[in-house]
Length: 214
Image 1: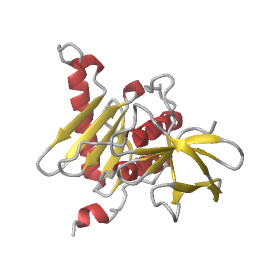
Image 2: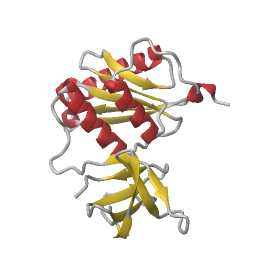
Image 3: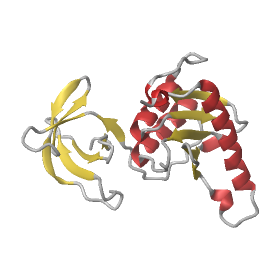
């Protein structure tokens, strides 16, 4: 049994709103740990199932990798905002945010894939909580993680959403089809009893995301 991936270790600082956001990101991406790091390489906060020392060291080193990459005299490197690294034992990702901040994630061995919707949600929430400049593109769909109850007749079809501390029954209007859907993702257009319409996407890890209510 991989105890390291299953047992949460003691924190060396009080949990904050940042750690709650990072914990949701870990779950959405099946990551071992995530950290918010500033331009000096200092960890603002972290979440996950590895030691605080390990994630702090990884965050500091990968923030330097991002800085060195952007400083390189190579066309296009100055605009690099996403670096994925695979090693023999584990993988890492560093995602640049505004004002010199970055998200660093430790991933499973041989993995480099991230949930783009979980990352978009975490980026939006961290920017709001920290008051830093946004790096999200204009018109970016504001996806949010949501708990879904599936139909007893079709295990792939959503029946209700957990919203406002209650199950809200949804009427499926059809399939959600968009260029941003990956091959193994499934999307639906749905309507709540209030008449509000939304898009729902199930990602390969079984996590569901919804866009803003229309």
